[in-house]
Length: 102
Image (cartoon, rainbow, N blue to C red; front, side, top):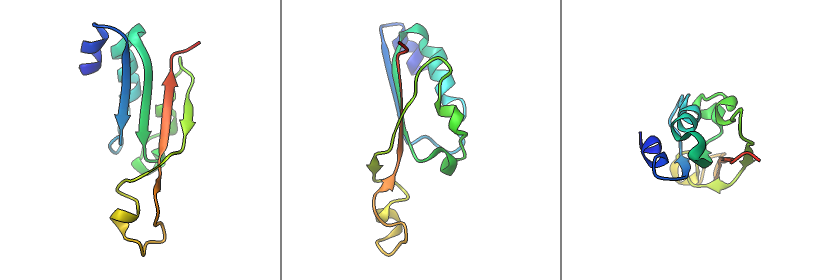
């Protein structure tokens, strides 16, 4: 609803951080709600397989997709699991950037 509202006022930039489990449909809904006013979308998330999300969900049929791998703090990092964890350290996130086509 917020994307649709702001799209009526000008160009829209969508940034979603830490998508919930099985968040299917978010990308398509945001693209549809913003229409031609969508300037760029970014999704910072855990690897899609960990939140049971098909990787294709974060790719747009009409926009290029740039995938980056920043290290962030999250629920699977050393602060959450403790320094004794085999997976200690900063969590490897994925940032999907969908800029305007062209």
